[in-house]
Amino acid sequence: MTDTPKPLLIKRYASRRLYNTETSDYVTLEDIAGFIRDGREVQIVDLKSGDDLTRQYLLQIVADHESRGESVLPIAVLTDLVRSYTTQAQSVVPEFLASSFEMLQQGQSKMMDNMAAIHPMASMPGFDAMRAQQQAFFAAMTGGMPSPSDPEAEATPDDASPSEELDAIKRQLADLQNKLSKM
View (spheres, rainbow, N blue to C red):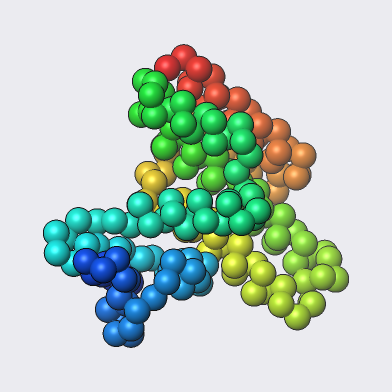
């Protein structure tokens, strides 16, 4: 059994100030985003009620970045997310998003591995930091969502070519879209 580190506990006071229990100081949303980028798990709780506010604050961080022009989510995706809250597809959306991010993460990790093996950029200062940041981003984006276990999903062998891997990812995405449309 592996020991997973406890999440960094952030307490929200009645004044809405956020308190880092590890360092005994107040933090901002940007500080919390930095912890997550560094690969830390965070849990934000209301001091008085004990309610878990993590989801609310993570959504606020995403909204703040989107409103500053750091857009990651296309309008069509945001629109579909809003629609999913009012349809029966709501139960499938978290699994679909988790699967999509997992496929994206696997594809990007393999691409980074291939680049490291053949590309001179791999020896550039900061390349490892960029790679670590990419991994932390995907860990944060998929954290808390169940990893889907789809027996129909095709596994790609380690020696598959990039085009074969891309085809496999496209097939998996099409399968997920079909399942979603049937709901």
